[in-house]
Amino acid sequence: MHSQPTYRLSLPRKYMQAIVFEKIQQLSIQEKPIPTLTDGDVLIQTELCGICASDLAALRGDVSDYAPPVVMGHELAGVIVDSRHPDVKVGERVTVNPMISCGTCAECKNDLDKYCNTVEGIGHDIDGGYAEYMRMPKHGVDTGKLIRVPDSIPHEELLFLEPLGCCLNAMQETLFKDSVAILGAGPIGLMLTQLTKRAGLATYVVEPMPHRRTVAETLGADLTFDTSSESVAHLRDITNGGVDTVISATTNNASAIKLAFEIVRRGGCLNFFGLAPEGEEFRINLEEFHYAGHKLMASWAFSRASLEASKQLLIEKALNFEPLLTDRFPITDGLDAFDNAAAQRGVKTAVHP
Image 1 (cartoon, rainbow, N blue to C red):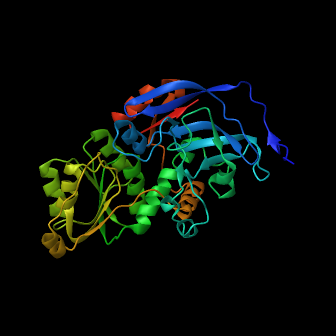
Image 2: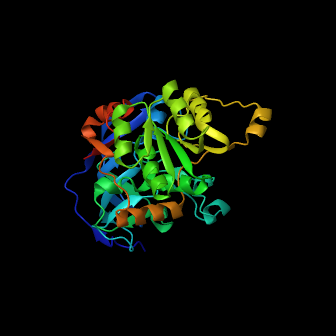
Image 3: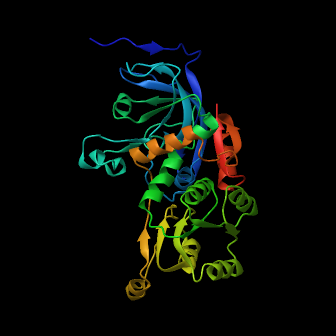
């Protein structure tokens, strides 16, 4: 016998607007049916959803972990408006852990859901938050992928919970000593700037765009630099040959990789956090690498623990997100929103109903 809906809010219509990733270089605004629920599912009404660099990369064709056609969007803030799950109430404010995994394999048991063989990504494989409504399936709720938050967290900050979780994961994995250079002052670079300052590190931000360097300075960067050879030489000089750690929070093309190695000291750590253009390769001379003693790594995504830590930082108002969310577009202007984000106008672009 099927259980009846535990909580339900009548929806005024049957269709919604959504931004659909159809294929590489093809994005469209479509009218789609509001998702229907089965037992255990919940329906989220989107309040705000941030445009992630990974979505821009997918549209360009630089990454392959998307299954179009799909409604993109995984950095969302929303509210439950329909629930067929006994543990979820209408009116609860939520975001999501966008990696729906099996919950039982060795990777999932070790909080490494991103390596689960059956993982599906919200906004990658199943419809996400660039729509007026989004369905969270029962399995996602049952495995803890629906993240409830108190009303004290405004949606303008809640949309940063997932990317901040990625930053916290990188902070845990990266080797630090006294100084760090962050390449890129986009949303990720600016959150990392605040986290490294909280950790007591001398923090230098390298960013070609003046308006983003200004935001980095506002958020506590010790010094900011453009990418000119003179600036790079100055950074090396004031750090006595290079910083202890470099986190590349930008597109890891050949010039970014070269810059990272120019500003790190011997024995230092390089974390290539950002995505790379399709086909980008990185070659090293093993003898030179051996004697330079560099520690190379790549952090990506988050853990359940880092998302929980992110939630706590949001509750504590530990970080300043106000300068990050600079541009908002209605979903119906989603193509303009993507153009705005791709042109790196402002810092963070988000869409809303």
